[in-house]
Image 1 (cartoon, rainbow, N blue to C red):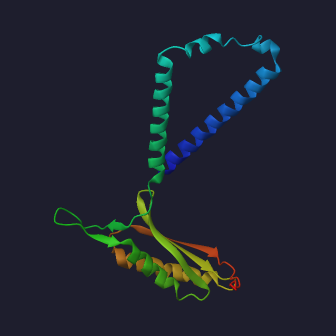
Image 2: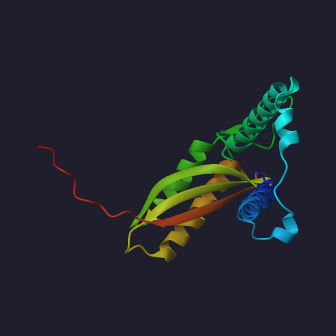
Image 3: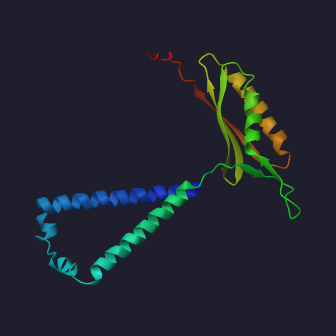
Length: 191
């Protein structure tokens, strides 16, 4: 999902939420008769109640339910799209054949560059599609005594390793996410 689509979805959810809250407040105000001059007395719902006995009413509800289910399945499918790739198509691919790079090997080469830093432990990595390009994103855990300057040097080495794997024509960025290492706990004994 693109950033524009995600932003539009968030705005739409906010508007729908605000409308539902406003409808709830209006229903409470109508029930409690907080604003009798605006409401003008009790609401007559007999015409709506009479329509529920019509022959088309169950079919209309069924159609609305099917539409909501299809909308939900479409929304689910859109959100299931992963932004990670297993293979990266390289420049030089054409009718004669396709050149691809295994993203696992690319991430492993970047992780190997991080192994030289004491106190920095590789956790996970992936190749992501981002803003029309690709970014190799590696997460590493840093112990409290680790030097971030050493991590920055290792990140530069990892970026060079990624570029070496992909070639000079490929455009892929590199991102190192450094997180705090989890405290090691004593293993529990089973008796």
